[in-house]
View: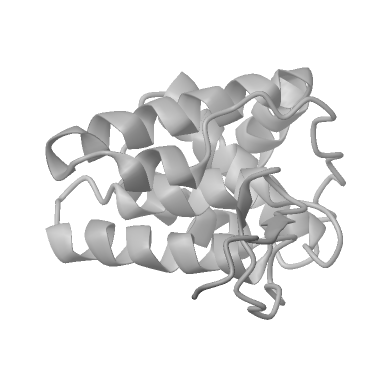
Length: 169
């Protein structure tokens, strides 16, 4: 008979609780291996779409924004938040946000601000998106991004100012 006592692991970035599969934690993000596994599943979905707006960048930025902290560089966190800002506040597509990241990366000597992840993690998680059927996934990706961006509102003026400076927007 199978053991009915499932143990759970809490992702240190987003707070999502998932069955513990003993997966190694992410070396790029402040994320459990179990959460990162969901990210790979969603990445497969978004990359397979081949859409011109490149919704994949929205999940990259949203996941990055939710998984800042230990082991995540200031640049990675800032680029994720800037991507959400550009998409949700400035109406840029994922493809345009990705190009902005390329343009930002050209400023090699720029000291990217150190942003502190929000204490309150009242947001949708990647599990909410994964659980949706394919007909609702894209809309839920947008809702996930918006709920994450809302949690980072304390940094909107700084992100806007840096994007304006670096990207001349």
